[in-house]
Structures are given as structure tokens and as C-alpha cells.
Length: 609
Ligand code: AGP
Image 1 (cartoon, protein in one colour):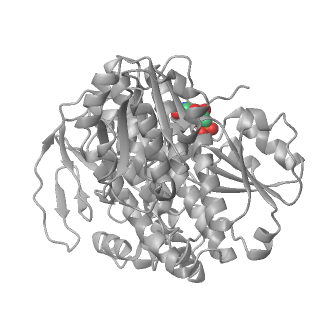
Image 2 (cartoon, protein in one colour; image 1 turned 180 degrees about the vertical axis):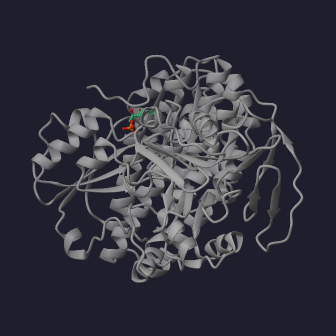
């Protein structure tokens, strides 16, 4: 999730480009750059690091010119570095592009272009677009852009610049946001409204497949087929802070609603088109490598630890290799039994959590092979691990992790299916069945997000209880742990999650009249057992909110309220059942007027022991 900007006008472009990128830094901040046409050449200035590093680099020689584009990066392909920073150019430097998104087929396009003599300067997927434009250009800039769009797969918002057509910028989008700001004798392009709100409140919201040719005094928009499109002006009435949150009240709520996209992006280019297999280009594992492992550790902290628990179920169920899950701060000091037949997987959104980093280093010291699952390209954990799988959730600003968790679950599932594909532990029919359902998950998350009113009501009704319990069995228990952590960390309610079968061994003593119990019951092989545990707490007059799958017509007979999520395979349902729990925590925190995005005593990335 990068930030992109563009300017065509009569004023100097660079000041707007820098100002706009400053407003978009919440979208990504590991490197930045601008390109400005000075009447003869397109000057590209870019650097690794936050925007401040670019400003410092430009001091005393800010590129001059009235047409320019800019970018602030959230790395997905190619670690943060000067050469991987945007804007990217073709061999001649005549075509320059900035991009937000992921080009799924970039590797095959790159190989074809290299065969045709193109020389690449970066590891990014984006640079392929600049060379493709160079390859396809025959004198008509817009036509060449359309030819490029026919050949790229993935998600993108793009702004193109050409030395041959210096009075215009061309921009387009698919699955990623893009807006055009309407000025007087100038026009602005941005991946998001915060970048332009200080200059204009009149905007065009660009739709998928639309291509806009933007000049200082005209904007020509056509659809995928090239037919002209008449756009309605969208008048922005948000203040700058609200704009950064995309109109949501808090980053946490915005990030909860970004989950369909985050999960879709994390799956992109990793599920074979015919649903026959999972592709992990970044691993290149084989049966011999997998057979060398006698044991797998999955180690993490907090929410990432809760995702690791789900990962254990997936790997043991689908690959039949024993998995031990550990809290990193415990793992690093308990001299775990590790040797060169051990694989240690560490999970971390930030990639900087010191306990998890230390656990990784300890595993390597003891001879284990290591794999990191992280959301930040180039982070310490990513650099330390032997191999890395990136979740593509984009920057997560709110302290309470939400979209990172669901992308970690989907990554764990894909990893298990990838290993099962190599070891042949899942039949081709079951693989197809599971991967077909996997494709539906992003849309099913959207469906789950549609009706939040009942959850708001429960939050208001039970938001002032100081004790709340979560129960579940098997994968439901793992999700219950995450639900209780979310409620604890942002609403400060003392929430506890228990394996439902464990209640009788002590905790049932805490169940009294009116205490809220959130009971997850989606796992078929333990469904009846879970029902009987629900009856146990109901017998003590607890108020039970049940979480069930859509086709379940049984649970509602035993609980006070039921929240249903769309039907899917019980292995995948944790990615759906966590969503109402995230919302419950959010609205409980709102009810208790807590600082949702910055809860007391907590930090987004814990870089101390
Ligand atoms: C979760 O909402 C918390 N922010 C916290 O538990 C977090 O998951 C934990 O600190 C691990 O962070 P990481 O994923 O960045 O390593």
C-alpha cells in the first residue's frame, strides 16, 4: 500500500509532490521519490528511508518544472533500497512510472523483456511496467499505456509520464484507490484524498479500468474499452485527519474493513489458477527438504502467537508433521530441543519484535532452518531469517492488530497447503475443494462486515461488564484467544479465553448470573461437545453470545444471541469468525470511550524485552 501523487499545472510541481507525499506517509514510508520534467529531461530523485531523507537529498537542488509524479513506498517486491525506490524508468529514461499495488505476472514479463535486451535496475515488479511501455510505444502515449494494461495482471494504481508528451500525465487503476483533484489551471493526482485536500476539495474518484489523460486545463477519461466517461465531481467534506482514515473514525476500524483487500492481496499470485496447488515462489521447497524435518516450531508474540496456534492446526492436520507453538519470550530462554532437523517459523507483523527476533536467532544458533512470516519487507526479522513469506496487509497503524492477523492465518493455511502439495498428504480433490473456497474468503469477509448493528448493540449492552469469557474448542479456541486479546487491549475489559472443555476444571467457578460468555461453535467434530459446554455456562445464568456458521440452525436454541458468518470449510472459518470479535472489541472500546488506536500502556511494535 504505497502513496502516489502527480501534478500538471503552471506552478512548480515539486512542492505539491512533497506536500502530498507527506500526507500519504501513513500508507508506506520505507522509501520515496519524485520525477519532474524540466522542459528537456525528466529528473528522477529518490532515496531509501522516510520522506525526510528525500527532502534532505533535495535540499538546494529541488527539481524544477510544472509536471511531475511522486511516490512513498511500502515494499512488497524488493527490500527498501535506493534502486528499488520509485519512480521507475525504462532503459532510455523517457518513460517514468509510479505504482501502488502488486503486478502478479511481473516475473514472466521481466524474463521476456530481458530476452529483448531490456536492462533492469531494480528488483521491483513496477519497473517491468516502464520497460513494457518502452517496448510497446509506437508514437501514441495513451495507446501504449492501454497495450501495457492488457498485459499486466494484479492490482494497481499507476501514473505514467513521458518525455515525448511532457504536457500530460496518464493514470489508471484496478483494485487500488486513485483520485484526481480539480484545480484552476492545474490538476492533481493521488492514491488517496489526504494528499490533495489542502489544494482542492473537488475530485474525480477513478473506477477500475478507467484511464485518465490529465493536462493542466483538461482531464479526458475513458473506460476500459476507450469510450469517453463523464464523471461526477465528488466534493470532499472531510478534515485532513479523517481523510487519512479514509472517512473511518479510527485506523482500527479502517483496517478491519481493509481485510478483504489485504487477504486478497496476500493470496494474489500464490493460488494456481486451476486451484490445484499453492505456489510459493519465494520458498522453492521439495520433498527431500520437507522430509528432513522431524519437528516444526512456530514462535511469536501476542496476536501473531494466536495466528501461530491456528498455523499449528493447519500444518499438523494437512501435512502431518508435529508442530510446537511457543511464546517467543519463553522460547528463547527455555533451551528448546532444536537441531538441524528442526524448522522454526516465526510470525511477526512488524518484523521488529525483539523477543521474536531473539527466538529466531536462538533457533539459528542451535542449527534450525528458519522461516519468517512478516508484513514488513526488509525488517530485522525478514533479514535474519533464512527465508521469508510476506503478508501483504499494507501498513497497520492501529496498535490492535486486525488485518495482519487475518493475512497471517491465510498465509499459514497457504503454507500448509503448499507443504501438503509437496508431500502429497492432501488429495487433489480435497485441494481443489479447499482452494476453491479460499478464493471466496475475501468476499465472505466483506459479507461479514456488512451487518455490524447487532454487534454494536451487544457492545453497548455488555460493554460495561468488567469480566467477559470466550470459549471454544479446536480452531474455535485459537480464535477465542484472539477475540479476548482484542477486547482486553483496547477496551480494558478483563477478558479470558478458555478451551471449552477446560471450564469444568476451575473456571466455571467464575461463571455467575449475567456474565457475558462468547462461545464459538464452528468445528463439526467437536460441535456437540461445545454445545454441552455452552449448556454448562447457561446453567449458571451466563449471557451467551454464540458465533456460528450460516447454515447452523441449532446453536440459537442454546444461546441468548447468535452471530453468524458465511458458510465455508471449518479450516477456513477462523478467518471469518474473528471479524465479529474484532468489531465487538472495537465497539466495546467506543462504548467505554477508550483511545482505540493508541490504547494505554501498549506500543505497535515491542522492540524491547
Ligand atoms: C496485537 O494487537 C498487539 N499489538 C500485540 O500483541 C502484537 O501482536 C505483538 O506485539 C506482536 O507484534 P508483531 O506481530 O509485530 O511481532
